[in-house]
Length: 139
Image (cartoon, rainbow, N blue to C red; front, side, top):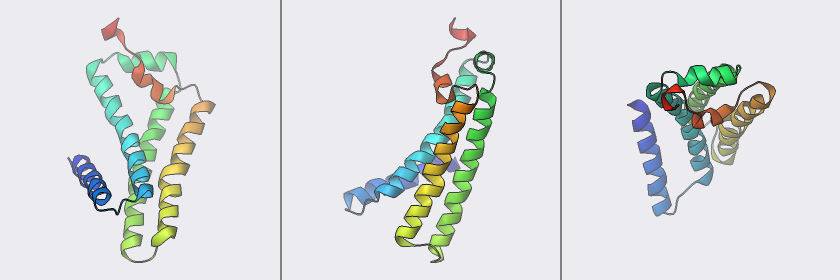
């Protein structure tokens, strides 16, 4: 419920800012990245609920997929915590303006996403592609 409120508020705010001519593309890009990472968890939960044998099949084909999934959860927690921390710094006037945008975008979008994607090449995992796989329910 809190995620639904968070995203409805912030995406609604982006729409309002676009209509008022105050749209901030860097903030929207960061919000889109956070939304996408949280979407991976929602997608995983929905796939497991749809087909209980799906994850076992994915793990058999890609033995290191669990690592990627665990790291996705860590990135989610990091992004959420970092974003809240940076909001607090911004509200206190410690980190404002362009410096705030650069730190937010690099620290909560580019670097974590790059680390997650680079890790995919080093382990036997298929990353987000496993969401397109089907389990025994569909055979």
